[in-house]
Image (tube, rainbow, N blue to C red; front, side):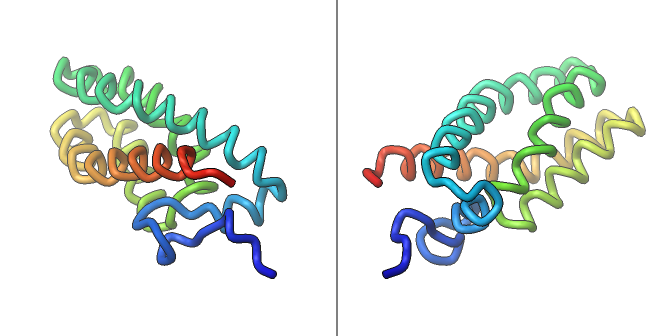
Length: 125
């Protein structure tokens, strides 16, 4: 019988991909523990990144985007990981307007991912 605790993005969620995470981490309890950390990061960092960009501090924004770029590909669909990576990479140019535009395009999707993670973690295994 297939493991019902892992879903692909197309099964139940738009951005969250627990099936890929489970393939990579091989333990649903580790996936859930790490998703709790991802959720904490998203909840705390998205507004902080926006605040850094509003203040013109691309370096500050990059310090928060970089770790997100590192671990999100494990837990989300590839398209979202690529979009986030583009925003983080653009920080290296110092172009506040360009980074802000890219971040503003990806932020609603990251917020939806946070909502999906929250829902997933509230669902019993």
